[in-house]
Length: 158
Image (cartoon, rainbow, N blue to C red; front, top):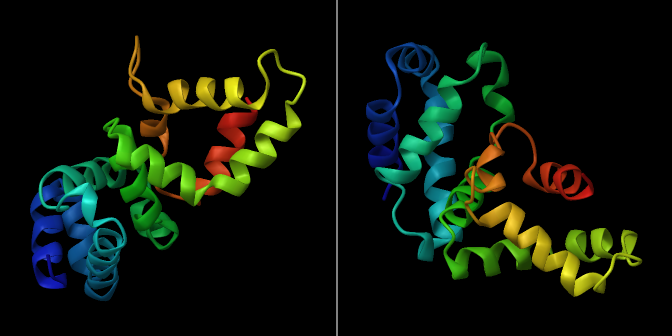
């Protein structure tokens, strides 16, 4: 997917109010489209962003009260990884764990007295983040506004 296709797909996926914000800021819309292309290039095994990811991104944008104010904080690359991992694909979970290995190690070290040790803690975190149960996988709570690394640290500590 190239930037023009990402831009067209994004504008088609969003609700009219979000579309108006994006159309009023064409440079920002181009930056978003470029970020989508870059995220896909980083994790091509996640599949093309058309459809699934663009709809996911559009939902998160529509949930913002003042989109124009928060749009510069949107972390498309982090959101792309979260979207992919939230689908429960093993390759996505592996990519996520590789991306945040140092953070996961630090989190596990903080809770070394937990019954079962670091491996048990990591498995429990995997289940909470990536497995749907009575609620969707927790990774889907990540909005994309702010760093996924920070969101992971807070979520894991809780």
